Length: 523
Image (cartoon, rainbow, N blue to C red; front, side, top):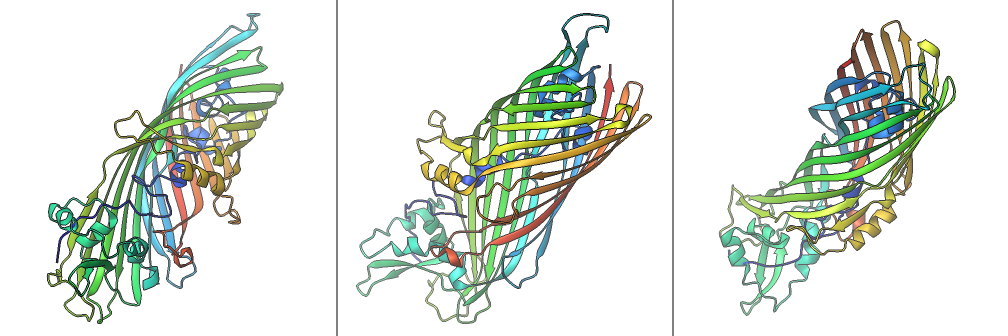
């Protein structure tokens, strides 16, 4: 088999536009679709604290609530997440495949330093609180897998047919030898060729004339496993002030940190005796690290002694990311078959062809967020609270990072146009309640985060949260626990085909159960 190098542009992968690592709308959505976080008290009421106040979770939702703190506090909140998913090729008769992904995390660590004038003091500003701490706002841990049957027009190899067809007589195929011999692959077609999943066909005159993809059987068993991990967290510094115990005003600055990894492993196989092809495995490894900055302002008004209204607005988050990406491809073959193959075909074993891409830097601007809330206190018996949050997902934007050593001057114009056409405004609704029984607390809540997609999906892109919580207050010590049960659906396409109607769409029904415990002291 001749070994040659071919420099070609990166093909479209998984429905995203091709350059570097194919950043696209899904990346913008990943860092815009946040969840409620904070200590177990916040989680137990489904994050519905915009008008409540005196809750550390206000630091990342409505910092005006810090003005209601009467005492200072310190706390830490570890947690465990248990996730599972059932996935299948949408519309197929194949059984769903179950997968799991569990994690341990720190949901919140923080300190609040409150000061308050004595009750007899006539000052209009009654006091306030400075808070700083860490809050986990997005959980990227998830595992999915599917198994099914596709025909050879839907195969993994078929996505490369349009690019292979562009190589005509007169094209210089000679450099493919250097790429394979050096094991430095710089194109998808070169990688296919190095893994013996493509042949160079010669004309009668002995000239290289075409690149032909490996022949496969008419029906293929296909499956894929996707394991994602990581989170988005925010370190905040904020202050809330108290004006005459009626008006509370606050602001905060957030320093965002994100870590995301994803490993995909796709396999295809057949048992057709007419082909030498047995199977292929395509594996991708993606790592993304990012940091960013945002700010928020908020207000709470005590309209009546037992009725509060709250509102806050958060600026877009400006984030800088660096990605690492690599792919590996291996094919295995049998000695049987009637299709034309190279004489050195590695029968019974595979040749691994790996592409290692240079690191790539870019930036994302997430949408601004606006929150509105109402809380009704029930004296010493507890409270009921509810929030509505607006997020304009179509406002997210990808940008280049030309001043970064790993950046480029790519404009992201097509990707940003896709964001505007795919996503829409959404409203997230949260409700919660707490009952107080002497030193004990009992909590419950629910939230629905709106579907960000414009397409009519009957709300299948929404996320639903159901929460329970309990706590105890004893002297200057408090202990809270919360359980959050999340349900959501997800659709994705493993790869793009020239004929989009042939693409396999994978539907995933997922759930995640998170338990958190907060231990803290007041002083």
